[in-house]
Length: 323
Ligand code: SF4
Image 1: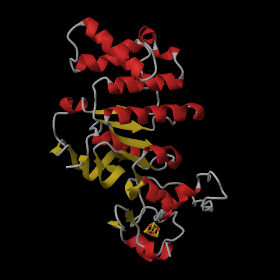
Image 2 (image 1 turned 60 degrees about the vertical axis):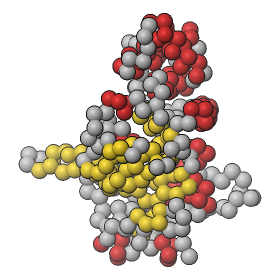
Image 3 (image 1 turned 180 degrees about the vertical axis):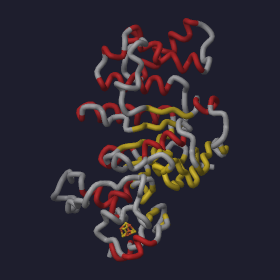
């Protein structure tokens, strides 16, 4: 199959106690299905709290799924021992400050996965591998003996990327890898990830809260809202022809590069905040903020359906909204 990853009906609930006797669930990811083709980048966007980070971690089994299936290269790994898959599936974390151990040298941070997976025979070979990895991400051998706190945010993220690359993975979850970095550094890191992909054939799940960051790097983009996938299509189609009201809102927040040539977009501002995933609204979870909500939206959960080729949307009122 062309798909490296297939996710079927994935749910991740976090139980929390409410008072003495009652437990409720935070429905962080609530019934998400999608696939990621070999060698592509699937962008995943949404506000903080929409479940995108939990989704990325759950497909790596850093969280155990509450329900659903994770299929990797044709094999159901939902209940498998993950150690062999840790080599194939890696993650780059959002915060390069929090994710690197300050007591370890850069060489040991990058070398640790090599140790875990026994990827060298001699100390010399280990050292060579570490140097090569540092060079791959634009650092150099001399950096190996220094500590992570001696580096800037952008350099730290490069160290985090070198660590992810150490095991020669096939699939990498990039969990908002540039959100904590200065805007001037963001493009450098994204370009590097893109070059690495072209060279090594990686498959990426690229998580971001902002559509402008995923636009160039993604082949397809999924939009999440309150634990659900509300729209998924190719990057081009999403920008040209967004169908879901929430996607339209996200796109309207991006400044248009050249207002003369581009179709101008009116900025849409939503009412209120994203509701709590503890007590999500009935029916369509977006209805409390949707300008197009009608009676049916409170009663029935909209089905994620295909409209046109490779364009999936979950909304009851598409025909009215987009005509
Ligand atoms: Fe808005 Fe209803 Fe569509 Fe949900 S289903 S996005 S509330 S119109």
